[in-house]
Length: 315
Image (cartoon, rainbow, N blue to C red; front, top):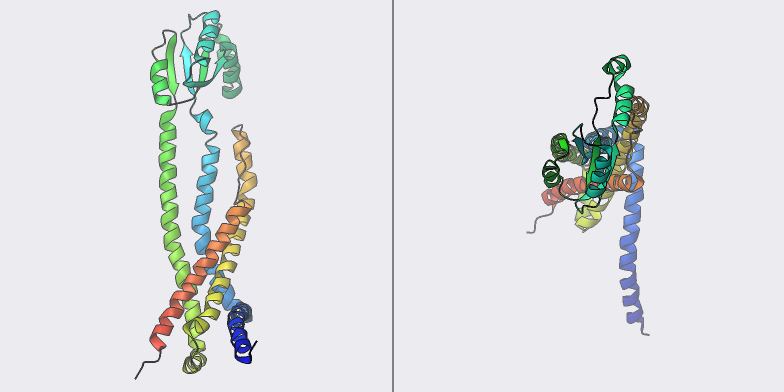
């Protein structure tokens, strides 16, 4: 192989290698600049972390409220209060008939005795219930829909044995409405506070650019490309975002640890085993990656503005 061919091959392979070397150098050098200014870096990371933690915390609250509302199938249940004169044999037959319907997933029969025991356990009115003598409660069939619950409720009201069909859709619809509203609020907060975090990292990078303005001017005069100049600042913004995302998760974990025990006690008083949950590892990774990208774009916007202002004009 001739010498010019070998030289061209070396140049072809050295350009990507130099590009990768500069990426690695920019990554390490930008981290070093961040660590050399611990107090200002900590302030920037802290402000960004708080801005990120607020919408993330709201999302966590909404997710836990959805879990606390209970299983979706359980919340869709309909209760059929049968007439007092309905004989037990007919109640059992009716439960089997309803269980065979295609629009019903399951049927649970609660006897008057079971209802009375539940009432005693929850109300503490033992003496008043004893004074009644006879059990005043009817047979109840708890039905889990397999399809449209509203249509099923209308059909169940037509049963001759049905005294009352209780359909708990109203409170669920209100809860779903509030959860949708809360989700929209979380997105609005995320947009506003994300913009705030973007401005914070942009201003920090801008100050760093101003302190190195003469150095960057020399690089431009020597013919350095915009990418070469921009790269260290992009990694600086990415490091800020990465640290802010990790700190935001740490703040949320600390808040969750502080609230977990009293919330578990409150849930236990209602007979629930509800426990507060945080971000799983996959979502935590998404949060950190998103914060890193946010810092990268903030630094890129400021650096691009600087390069457009200082680009040498052709004569």
